[in-house]
Every structure is written in structure tokens, then in C-alpha cells.
Image (cartoon, rainbow, N blue to C red; front, side):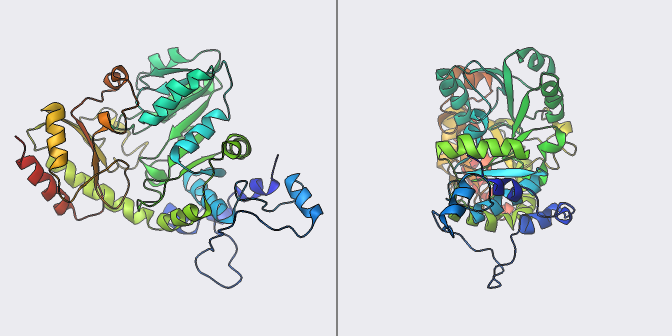
Length: 409
């Protein structure tokens, strides 16, 4: 089944929109025609289905012969506006919205895979993405090779004759490994393989993988794109034909589409994304300076530090180091647990990109689906702590960390 309207609506509305600064695109990208009542904010189309003028019109829409909406799982004006806005921010022609970040990853990958295919994936990815690739894919006859993609020779060796996709996160969750997107893209093009990049940690304001050769860019929109901790959602952007395939096969048939209300909330959140990202990054810089002075920390993972592998990509591939920091506690699991449990303002919770500063223990939380061997290979030790620096005053974030470090035994 095809819906011609999705192709038309998946493209930027005008060439002038593409000339806007990204700060402006975050507010106006994908804007629909003015509401007939003159509302400044686009209406929320909180509806499951759409009424046809006639039986003939309904049949024409389902046959793809007439543009228009039919059923919100197949397309919704509010969701479509969000898809266009994020696609414009990424510099991509089209976008598809999913109910969760993992819904976006799953629908994207499965749209291009079948039994007997092979995937090359970074050895440092989100725990549930790892579980999808290593456990579920295996059940359906899809093989995945996990490789350190900072090693170009090892990455080149990982490609096989049946490789269909390559998948990377950069910076990688949780210890911020940086991967040269352009270098991986060159290998993918040599093997005629699509490259999928998870850009959640950076957002399109700090990094645009499509400009570096990525074919598809996925986001957990739960994080910075929404930014307020009240939505779970995902997005993928890419070429029109690829996005249509994802929308009208796996995403539609898995039922992992985004609700109109969630799309409306993310549209609202996107309007402040530029100012939020600036504050997140400024705060993270100050927090890293504080953490660097702590004797109980054995190692800090942050792309903004000159000691961080791949630091040279900051300012070229990525515009800033971001606002997620990871560090190893010298005292291992016991010290990490004590530090986390003694915090007062900073919230002990998974996720990132919210107004609140969040801190968590990857080995027992977000990356617990990985085997101990896989965690070890990815450098995720029991003393590793990840902090997503929020929008509070930096002095208050540091003060809370300070009182908890002071109480370590």
C-alpha cells in the first residue's frame, strides 16, 4: 500500500526553508499552512481516523491515487509536521516518526534486511540496540559482526558479500567513543551498503551525519529533541524512497508509529532546542572541569578533553562535545553505588537530554542486556557512571556532586 501524500509531505515545503539557520528551522521547519482560525501553534490532530467525502475518495487514497490522510497509523498532520521539521534539521529529504527510539531503530533496520543478510555494527552501542542485533536478529537468520569502528582496517575486514547495513552511534553510549562517520561511509559506499547513524547524543544542531555520508539518521526523540522528560519517541530521516519503505512496511506493520499528542509535545520542545543545547553544553564543560579534580575518579570519558580518543573530530564532525559525561570510579561498583545513592538534587534515572541532570550506572541499568563479555569488550566496567548534564545552574550541579564525593568512604 502506498500514500502519495507522504512523499509530497515528506519534502521540505520550500527552498527558502532550506536556507534558514538551524535555530530558525527548529521553530519553523515543516510548518503547515496557517490554521484557518489563525492559531499561532499548529493544531493537535488528536484523531484515529479521517473522514472521506465519498467511497470513491477513500478508495483513491488507499490506492495512492489521491493525496490525503486515512488513518493515523498511516499518517497524521501533526506527526507529519514533526517528521518534516526534523528532516530539515538533519538536512535530509524526508523523515518517519516512531513510538520509541528502539521502534525507529528496529523499523529502519528490518526494512532492509531478510534471512541470510549480514550487518556490521559498532561494538559500542546502546544496550537494547545490542540486544536487538545480537539476540532477535539471530533468531531470524540475520548475522551481525560487532567491530571497533575506530579501527578502519578491522572495519573493512568485517564487511562480507551479504552485508546489507552498517550501524554506528557517535558519540557512543555510554562512554562517548567517537567514530569518523565519513571514513565509515567511504567503506560502505565501496561495498554498496547503507550506513545508519544514531545521532541521539548530538542532535542535528551539533552533528549532521547525512552531510558526512550517512544514508539514514535515527534519534531517540525521547532525549534532547523533546527535552522535557514527558515523551517516549523515535525518528529516522533519509532519502524519500528509503523513508517511504520504512513507513509503509515495517513501521506501519509493526504498529510502532508515533501518537499525534507525542508529536505535538516534541514540536513544542524543538522550539527551545538551540538555547537548551547551548546551556547543556556550557554546563557540561564546567562539570567536567570539576570532575577532573576528583582523586576518586580514575578516568573521564568526554570528547571535549584533549585526552579523549577522537577528540580531533570535535569542531569538524561535531560542533561541540555535547553534554553527556562518563567516568570510572577508582573504587569500582561499591564507590559508584555510594556516589549515586548520596546525591540530593541530581536524579538517579536512565535517559538523557532532559532539563534535569540525570545520572545512572550503565552496567546494571541501560547496558544490562549486554553479556558481561560484551560489556568488557566495550569498556563498560562496574565502576562506570554516566551523567547527563541538565539545565540547572552549573554551581548547583557541582555542589551536589561535591557533597556526594565528600561522603565517599
